[in-house]
Length: 307
Image (cartoon, rainbow, N blue to C red; front, side, top):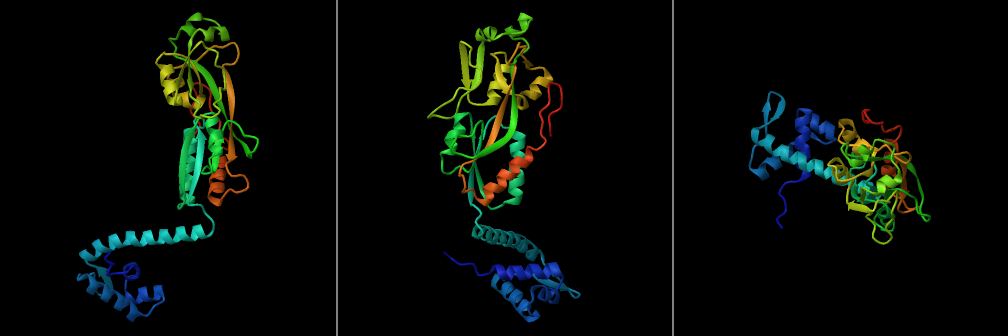
């Protein structure tokens, strides 16, 4: 492989001359002699065969060629600084990658807000995100690559804390046959209709949570698909309020008038996948997730969603 003829140090000196306005100012800024600064730029121009600077009065200015080349060199310098910052962080114990498994019932806007804050504070750590349903969270905890899990329970051998409660509402299309009964609904009424449920993503010990009493049941892979099927009139489902709030507001779906059990509250827990061994990046993300849910409440039908 052919080695570069120029060095990052030469480009950094050129950048300092431009930023500081001259050779003397750059030398003072870099704590070098003015002769060494002048030599490095002279050598750089000689190696490239291109004039980079011209003197206008007592101030050094970039030529057009110099502007184009320094623009590219600035990207290299920034990359070198990021590389050194990453190395320093790794020396201090920051993980190069963390695994995050999140139940699909967790509000997506809150997750995106937390991840955006995390990328701003921990730039060198990658996140492997996995979306899970029910026992899929339990299985993720057994995966040694998963550091943080947001799930509906805390298995006995793990540590966790309540993160947020999510309301699930029994809903159907306003034209659905259940609304035509014109009275409070019972579980016997529901048993005669098609129920749409989200499939447990776990494979070893799948769980059936919630009411599953309908004789006919369709299973889908996402909450959004379930909501769309309900809005189209195919069946009814219990869905997170934050997922269906826009459909409630526009009247595409409506809460079923159940005599009881029309709303159920599902707790979501923040669980450490590596009890006692959580790294600083995983700990930072855990704290950000907890901070992002503070004070968050979900509105009733017709209200604006929480920001």
